[in-house]
Length: 309
Image (cartoon, rainbow, N blue to C red; front, top):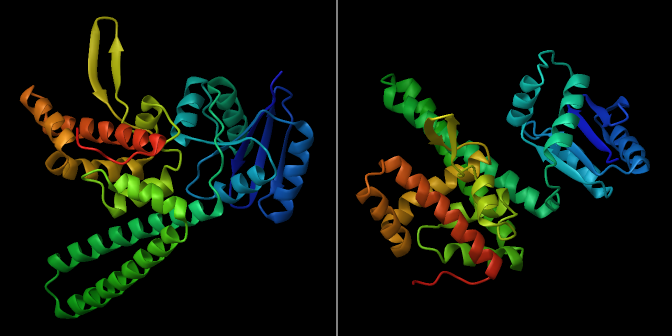
């Protein structure tokens, strides 16, 4: 019988639950605790070790387990919570969370993917930091527009200039990270060969969707959070929605779709056909974003740049 391990990650500790044995324990979330956990799990020989994405807290643990040769998968917390609700599990403690993660993994059999190497994690961190700085810049500029007090304007102006300087530094660091790897440069060139895909979009995909080029079309759309799902019951059918996946990738692709719908001949024609068929503008742009990620996946898979049909 397959051995499945669920781990709940908190700042101080790692709670572990093993199925089907029901064995459970905790270790400190530090170097010694992680080393002990790797040794113990190595002896068990699990088929999969699952951790819940927790805003970055899981990264060190996942990386340590993967480097020890254990089959690690990071699962979606929203899906785990929905699974817990379906089980009628309302209580929430770290040991219970570890059990739920193990049960969810046992039931859904998520595919184990390699943990990105340190260079990809660095690029992902830089891209995430760039996104944070842009959000802060937007907030401070909005405050500046609403402020009439001269002293506050000066304060906001100083902070905006500092954030702009930091943004330039981050952009330089991202440039350096990409140019340090010939493989990344090749992938970036392939991605940017597609009209509508610029530097920021290509580097977001490199950093936060490194699987691109190894997926089928459905997996690519789902991982980007662009696969539609419909609410249906009996004769009633509701609207289709998108969701899940990687929000930062979905946002980047949506912005790219705005440009592609104007400047990419193939996607512009696709967008125009949808609008002519009566599709709402937002639905048409989401469809363009979905078609775009499928196209980019094929380009990386085939190692062939964009060619106008």
